[in-house]
Image (cartoon, rainbow, N blue to C red):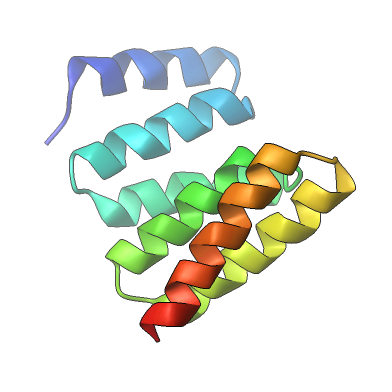
Length: 107
């Protein structure tokens, strides 16, 4: 399954292959299509190329939760908390801490 938006984003990626925002948008588009393996591939590509892209970690953790991999979800939240503290980005830090706490309460 594909979408016009996904095709547009992928054509943009050809010109800017390491653009974290474009990679993020593609990952979110795949996620919205319930194509979790491809969404994960793009999230992990961001992490490899730009591990300080703090917006990645909350959504990566949530994706892992949808994929029922709570261990990797927790790791994503914890890594994001470290990045959010370094930047600092207190909004992202708050969201990541809340996501981590909610996941801990579910376990």
